[in-house]
Amino acid sequence: MANKRQLKIGAYLVGSGMHITSWRHPLASPNASIDVHALAQQAQIAEAGKFDFVFSADSLAINHESHPQIVNRFDPIVLSTALAGATEKIGIAATASTTYSEPYILARQFASVDHISSGRAGWNVVTTADATGQTALNFNRDHHWEHDHRYERAEEFVDVVKGLWDSWEDDAFLYDKKHDLFYDKAKVHEVNFKGNYFQVKGPLNIARSKQGQPVIFQAGASKPGQRLAARTGEVIFTSWDNIEQAKQYYQTLKARLANFGRDDSELLILHAISPIVASTAEAAEGKFNELHSLTDPYESLKFISGYMGNVDFSQYALDTPAAEVVFPEVNSIQSNFKEMKAIIDLERDLTVGDLYGRFFGPARKDAFIGTPTQIADEMQKWWKEEATDGFMIQFPLAPRDLQDFVELVVPILQARGIFREEYEGETLRDHLGLQKPINQFVKKHSEV
Image 1: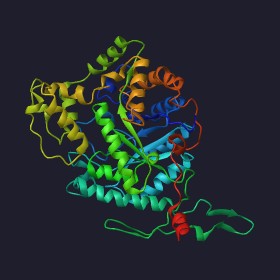
Image 2: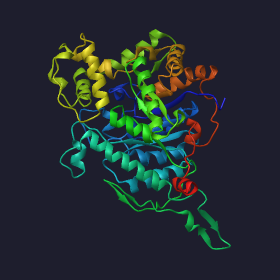
Image 3: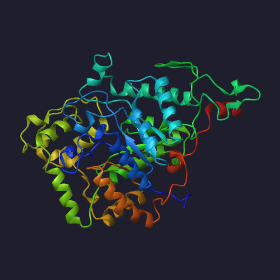
């Protein structure tokens, strides 16, 4: 079973849930995003379901029109240390920006989490893409850097971080009391990186981790984003409107790996879904409708605005045809914008009032709202037809929908032999089937 292709599953932790008004639900804890016990409980539920990892996103500025749960939340790297202590096996991935950080600091932070968790850490590489530009103003800048510039810098940033993670060979620390040898100086390396954006000497002041390096996560579908993913990514988050689009992206990105001397097995693609499960299809629809009924239509439109170049949808009447909306130039998440704009152009009957339910409503792909068998069938279909290697699950209401999924859907996937019944390894790389990277300095020496 260990050598068979297996479904990969991660859980997105966003306080009370992914739905914009999840915090208003009677079952929700409104302050869950800064309740470490609530977040640890969600991680423990996911671990009981044998998920590969839990994931924490981030933002570096306040947008008053965004999801309420993300204006009040922990630094995800700090949160990762708490989740590591609350769990034993599950991987712990966190977001950190290459645009508003420094490679040495970030490399040390994630290496620390990797040691604290015994090799279960992952870094979600983002270039930061807030449409309002508020983040730039928090970091002594007048404006947000252009999209392609951010990705060029990100490539160098990742190279520096990975070099720092390899500063020490695996057996560099001797701890030889008898001979007074704490470490072997011949097995510690300076990075001496000099590029267009960074100049970093090294070495890092922490040993290489149990899994070699934290796993690199990314979520980029633009051309620069795909290049960064194909060159350095190991787990890629995507969200496509249908299975055919997902298949096309899957094939295209996997094909690009060869350009960088990489194999298909070195990169996993995970598709985002928001399932709602119940014993009957009617009960699942009822859960959906109850949650969606809490949504103020104009508040949801303000949320959408941030993904569409910061256009103010709330200035339009709800029955305005979406195709009549005028869109400004976008400098934020281009892949999201292009997909959503294409849907608006294609589905001419969409109104402004329809947009949140179409784009961000729980389980917008309605095959993921239903019975346990229905949802398991749909997940297996996407996985079997190579539209994805697994799923990043953004549960609409937490912990309810997470608990329901673990209790009702996971056993079906396990019975079909496509998802683990027990963890077979110790590290996040073990769970994902990713090899421990060879230390680049050792590799370079062996090639001489």
